[in-house]
Image 1 (cartoon, helix red, strand yellow):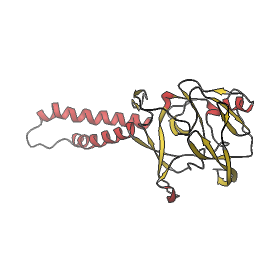
Image 2: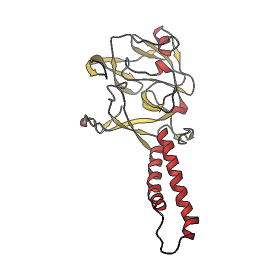
Image 3: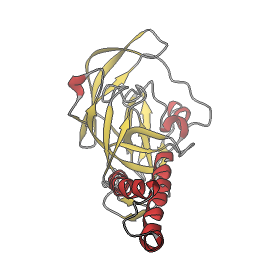
Length: 259
């Protein structure tokens, strides 16, 4: 969000200088006199900034994965692309939808503004849609009374920052039309008493409010998601993640579609 604001400011400044030169400065400049340096720079940078701003705001935006909460689907260090058009065109910074296309589907990997602090972007998987009734028993998701199919694949080892090697169970989960990998640990999760996760552990059913989504990380026991801080409002949506375009440490991940 801060970067978008920065680009708007730079775009406004360079555009204003260019227009000022067209309508005022150029008429006062003696014939044959070179343009001032700031006019030359403004004319050079404005089209480039406008193109980048348009692409990032309405078509596709790059993000870097900072943590392991979406393992094994996404790894820390993955550089991904997010489709900004999938969930509708939005006014930059304000994030109000002015052209609707579609809404998140169950199983989508989506980027959104973190509800407690909207200047931060988060990435998780859509688990619950508006009106869905969510339960989570014995580390199995139950949506609208139907338990999701989960099939064990193998043991999965990884390292977390400041921790030893962790072993988790990697399984295939069928979430809507999407089959994807999840990681499950043999450890209990701890939540504040008023957190949705605490209610789920107590056997309660959570209903997703209209205009909101319930998000979870694929690394189910190592993810701060809707179980911790609540629902994702429609107004916080950024886009759908669809492609890994770079990972400096693991080149074999380049070009991997996100499912």
